[in-house]
Image (cartoon, rainbow, N blue to C red):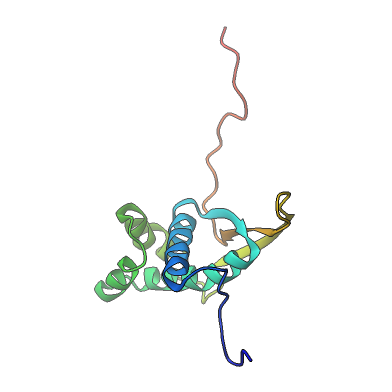
Length: 132
């Protein structure tokens, strides 16, 4: 019986699962929106929200705790300079999950996870312009 057992195993070993969530959280903080399976998104949400809470504190201790999870220095710096200060007024719930439907290959439910107060995307050219 699985009483009081939390978390999904996702068919991976503990070390593989830890590496997966570290990579997903890093990419979410880098791009502010990623597409993954629904089960991975739901599990990764708690780790990414804890990291954003550390980014709000902006102390040496919180920077060291975040560095244990985020290996990329640019993303680590961005967490404490851009993302953390953006959520200072919010008491939690930094991410949002949208269900996208089933994947064609194996039928896995796909989801889009994004930061709630996402920075607006830069307005660029939608298509290639013809050169004269």
